[in-house]
Amino acid sequence: MSQKLEEENPAEETGEEKQDTQEKEGSLPERAEEAKLKAKYPNLGQKPGGSDFLMKRLQKGQKYFDSGDYNMAKVKMKNKQLPSAGPDKNLVTGDHIPTPQDLPQRKFSLVTSKLAG
Amino acid sequence: TADIISTVEFNYSGDLLATGDKGGRVVIFQREQENKIRPHSRGEYNVYSTFQSHEPEFDYLKSLEIEEKINKIRWLPQQNAAHFLLSTNDKTIKLWKISERDKRAEGYNLKDEDGRLRDPFRITALRVPILKPMDLMVEASPRRIFANAHTYHINSISVNSDHETYLSADDLRINLWHLEITDRSFNIVDIKPANMEELTEVITAAEFHPHQCNVLVYSSSKGTIRLCDMRSSALCDRHSKFFEEPEDPSSRSFFSEIISSISDVKFSHSGRYMMTRDYLSVKVWDLNMESRPVETHQVHEYLRSKLCSLYENDCIFDKFECCWNGSDSAVMTGSYNNFFRMFDRSTRRDVTLEASRESSKPRASLKPRKVCAGGKRKKDEISVDSLDFNKKILHTAWHPVDNVIAVAATNNLYIFQDKAN
Image 1 (tube, one colour):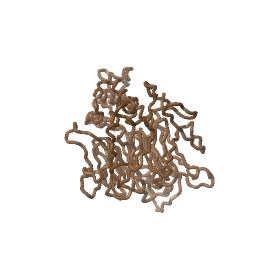
Image 2 (cartoon, chains in turn yellow, green; image 1 turned 90 degrees about the horizontal axis):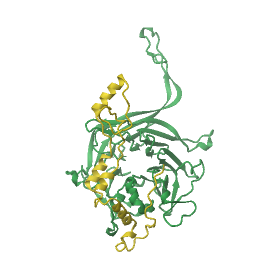
Image 3 (cartoon, rainbow over the protein chains, first blue to last red; image 1 turned 60 degrees about the horizontal axis):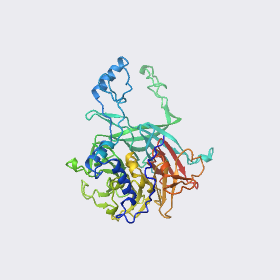
């Protein structure tokens, strides 16, 4: 499945149109794209390079798990077959003993934080 | 997804090509030598060795998984019959020895041919074991494990020209190691602020100078490069040179800093220049001029008017690598849709090629591709909106001498050769 870009604005702009930037803010391709983004996400912060943004980048979206539960499950698995993860992978507490493989893959996406400002 | 190639690297002679993947495996290819039986196979690369370099680990203290994905492989210069390489994941660097065994000793005194120990009282005569040829076996063994020196994720390793030390860089620190010593490493760069709220940039790549063993460079997420001289002080927090291209303040946008982030930095073989890759371009810098690059090559300028979507799908954070050819006359980098770009620095010509099964028949020439940015699309051109952004070529490598290139397209490796070879 290929990932296609959304084509919202059919009017094409080329990188060559860099003159008269101050007057026509829409003519600079980057500025036009910025306007699009801000229109979609009004709560977007001014600068994307803040420390919150960078700190999220440092973490790189790793999976969290409970080592105690994991080791207990490993011991139990040896004795008998436990019910495997149900269809709802978000329910990793309660009856189901989580293992690292069961945890939902947490994609590194800044969608919530970067766009919430 | 464990087959996704995450790094590609030729060794110093170009006879070996190593790839690392997301599953922690290393596959090494060897170039076929001149062969009378199969004359056309000269120059082909075939699998030489495969081994599991890194396994997934768990940091119990922080309840975090440590990915086994190989971030970088760097070869050591060859000093004897064996080959050595460094491979690293986010946290641990390993030195691997790859050696060949084509002889086996037979006629041991203390054990049988199948390895069982003989009863010493039954041994009545001594013999000298003799070496007999056997089928070639290539063995990989870990010789050193350099661990626990990085709090953040390792993005680069680089072997020093002294062949004794190497550096490893993570988002905030660069450490210097001696290849023989695993329980100690020296911190030479530390950009972690006392208060993390003041964090403004991270280290994105680092490399030692190819000839001057005291010089290293590191790039940042703000598009700057710092050159450090280890002779000036033990801690190289103060740079000797600072490379930054002046920005036109009127063209600044929300995306400016993100697309200026440097994803790779590579010295030329000559050591006179360095090349950086940011999201849309490749820049060549003269080490003697810090004020601006001497060359800028546009990789896919047509993406500038797609930055909104590329930000939403995270593609704007993709980290592309770049590489020089052996004579430093050309540079190469990857793009989307399995395209990769080559720039000839002397003729100023560039070409877009595709690494895919459909467009690569063995021994057929690659057809140049063209992307249509807007307006009328000509026949054979591809429109920007048809590009597949899941097909990224992040990793490419160029043979140190010949015109042979290796291109990693997700989980496939393509090796292309110049017809003149």
